[in-house]
Length: 140
Image 1: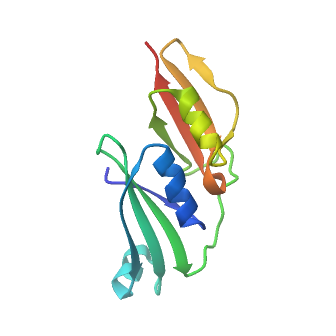
Image 2: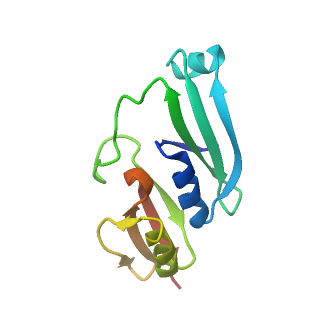
């Protein structure tokens, strides 16, 4: 897998949030032109993109802000059991410490932090713009 894409309204705040989570900004740019519209099927489009890389260097998150055409659907308040692509989960070293940092950036806990069979501590949070994010700390 090359990357996971998330469409946002506030690109700057979302980049800052994922930096706090430990991702590194790999690059930013603007995408527009006939070729881009042919790939996405959107026709005339203009998109600001920020590519974030995970600390291990194996995965990337593509954050996109569409200037043209306007966004046509909003899935940010969908529950965990909604159909389709819904969330991305990150492995963290210290779940409590990570939550404290992310709360300062507006993160909200969805349910509870739970221990799963003394193997993982897990939770879901809503990040910037309601983006659903899973956090997992391996125990032991």
